[in-house]
Length: 171
Image 1: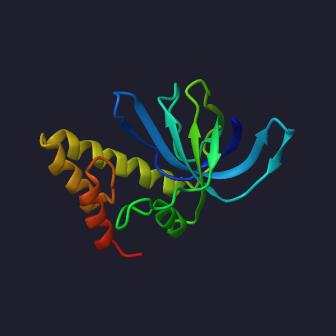
Image 2: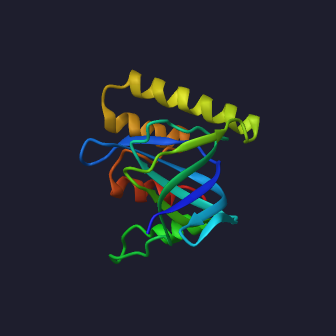
């Protein structure tokens, strides 16, 4: 069933178009509090959670303290031999769980600027450069490859290229 999760956005927020033309956003949350139907006061929790939200009305940014509604689960294990191992990938980033926001679930931003100012500046700079690369290169595949190479962005290109980039990246 649906639960509520609260914490502080601990990464850049990635926005992309889904398979059916709906925008999805993803980011890492430093989890702090969890609510379900059995605990109205919430439970104090810790650890990182990868968040995926369908088309939120408000876009959070690094350092925002938020609460949202959705489904919390363990990362998926690899289903196809040689396929992308999400559980291993997330474990290497110290991410313990995944959270999928509900369509009706509203994202509520409680406080702003709860993160490190230097990291916030670095993320704003990275987003600026990413937008300039996308605007300057009309070929989306070339822009995606260049952003992966220069900025470490791995969104937007196919799984085979993503695995190739991950093999080149140091662990």
